[in-house]
Amino acid sequence: MARSPCDLRLLLLAATVAFIYIQVRLFATQSHYADRLAEAEKSENQCTSQLKSLIDQVSMQQEKIVALEEMKIRQDEERAHLKILIQDLEKRSVQKLLNKNVVPVAAVVIMACNRPDYLERTVESILKYQTSVASKFPLFISQDGTNGAVKKKALDYKQITYMQHLNLEPVRTERPGELTAYYKIAKHYKWALDELFIKHNFARVIILEDDMEIAPDFFDYFEAAAKLLDNDKTIMAVSSWNDNGQKQFVNDPKALYRSDFFPGLGWMLTKSTWLELSPKWPKAYWDDWVRLKEIHGNRQFIRPEICRTYNFGKHGSSLGQFFEQYLEPIKLNDVHIDWNSEDLSYLGEDKFSTKFGKEVASATPLHGSDAVLKAHSMAADVRIQYDDQEDFERIARQFGIFEEWKDGIPRTAYKGVVVFRYKSSRRRIFLVSPDSLRQLGV
Image (tube, helix red, strand yellow):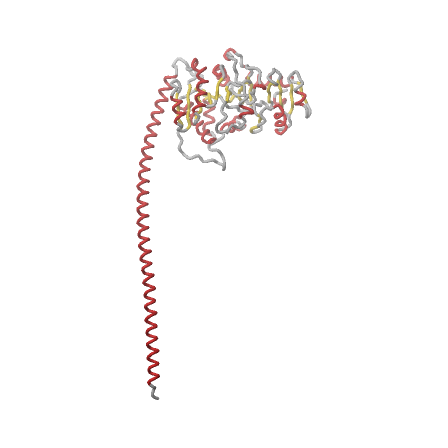
């Protein structure tokens, strides 16, 4: 059947429209891919530019790293050279200070860090009494760190040997929130005492801090005490401090006691004791560590009734803890005692225990919840028993003495007995544990 011309024209028109539609779609597709290709090329160019920039930055950082490494090498070399110079200076200074005809009683070291004004006050107090006995008590300043003002102040004193502890390693505390200062202090103490005992071979060392003043008889006291340390191995150290040495609690400048509690704050130990402690020295809180029973064992410490050091350091690593209540009111001895003519044999363990036991036993016992009130009206020595730490803290709080215990021992205690004077008089108050009299052999 023959197609009409009209049908052919329609088919031709449809084919034309289809062709045109396909061409338009192809053009649109080509245009779209051209745009995407342009974007891809642009992104590639940006990536190339960024990569080049990063390569340049890495190259610059590498150059900086190399420069820093070279600087570190130079600083290490300079530090090593400085250390040699300091050691040589120390050696010459020590040789100059030591009189070959006099065997030193003890080296005296002032532990310092970053308080030049405190250091000056301490040094001036010490030199007032040390100059006449310098050959017996050579003086050192050990600085922890690089504070320039402290170093300058220390080097101003030509009669003092300067030591510097440089430790640039970061401090890592064992517990969150701890002050790093206590870790630095412990490390500094170990370094300084190793230097004095092992490197310089002193038989004894007296440790002071840069916020202390000393009494007129400070050096006589430690010279006499040195004999006790040498002859009595039940004495671990001798201190110039009494935690309950506030004005209202002391009276007798000649009175000395044995104590199971390490007082610190101006103390002397021997080389043999240090060689025992040094290998196991703690990372922090060294003073509380010495107070542990497992460290001091059955040994005690000698302490005076009236302090031979006064701590004026309200601002320091302990943040002024207890200062106004316990430290500021401390009485510094102002009477010169000729300790070398005093008979200190009563401080031997057996003699002291017997003597002290009799004094405690002869004191009038007071009982009841109003025992402290009764003590105020007594004219003689009194004895008050506490049941446990909580009871002791209650009684101590009423009198105003230190309440604190460490490892089961109250501050200043001997065989559980804490003794202090009543309102600066000769009357004594004995606070005793339930087991004190038995321990004293009474």
